Amino acid sequence: MDNDENDTERKLAEEKFAEAQHAYQRGRLERALQLAQQAVEIDNSFNEIRHWMAERYVEMDQPYRASREYQAALRINDQDQEAWDRLEQVDPTAAARLKRLSQIAPDPFVARRQQAGATDLGESFDELGGVGAETGEMMTIGVADEGAEDVGPDPSTWEFEQDGEFLQRWLAQPVVETMVSTIRGLWAEPEPFESVLALCAHGSEQLHPQLFAAVNQAAQSLVVTPPELYVLPERTLHPVLVKDSPGILAVPTRATQTMAEAELVFVIGRELGYLCSDYLAARQAVEVVTERKPQLLSDCADTLREVLDEQMGLWRAELDAEALGRLRRLGHAWQQRAALSADRAGLLCCRDIKAATTAIAKMATPNIDQAAQVTLDQFLSQFAGQDAGQLAAIPVSEAPGRSTTYGAYRIQMLQWWATTAEYAGLREATDAKGETR
Image (cartoon, rainbow, N blue to C red):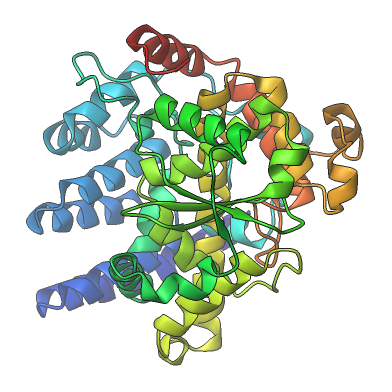
């Protein structure tokens, strides 16, 4: 991006920020934060806005959101002493973790992209910040803090470094906030999901011992209550996490037939990772907003999306075409990052990088019959020589968990993470506590 473009973005961001400050002075706090978020999305380097938003969140007694803003500011400028000082005040645990990890190497694929001169990562990445960590950027992945209670790994210790930041951007949208609240309310009632569960059958430990063993191992690894299990008679490998509180997970019988033992543990662990992180409502809101074309081989997933959409009311009426497109891109951008976090959770459950990456390859292969026979080398051979940034640049119409090209990116990212001290530390910590096999 040249200087003229930078100057234009800063000017537009300053104008939007001025609107935010004016709204705040008039007592319209929610509107002020919405405008400020739009301003920082226009110019991601405008850290003054992040400081201002963090101060508002402190006023609202929402230190978690303030922490996210200060962490985002430090990713842009790790020499921002004021951000360090404020982060230590609102979230000393996060501040300590960032300092411990400040010398960790960045995502190697971003460095490779930069060396190759490839910068076009697609619309959602250009506008919303890119999936990989910037060179020199601190990563927020680490082992559980010393002195933490013996309750299992904290999801923040395995989440992809930009996951939380983009989640907060997603949740800050008024339409999304309403959707998430509505979805959580639906979980308390059985009736909304009757049409979804009618497509499934109750899981039986006698009939599906491999499935129950995989769920129990994954739940033990992440220290989460095992969800109620249903089985799907569908030609797909993708489980459907129907609801939380309590959790209900529908797993295709084809997955138990196609996946090896460790691969199935990985697949289940990915889904339980969403429960650990309390991501499900936000994830389901993405599915409603993006309105991707139905997956012909997953009636359960499509029916669930339709049910949720019906419960949301006339949410589209609140948005013009431009705003709707931007909302979809934002949700898609977070979902891409959340998929990387889920992969890490799955790997912590199965402890087998070859099995984990082979499972990704199988799930990203469109032809279900071919997926049963695919090997990791065969899958990756399709993308030999392709830049990681190109693999990551999928359109909103492609679900990150099903995309073939994004599957290749996920595999590379997970292979890299498996070599880090963070992963080794998490494995050692959970093994020492006896929380995994």
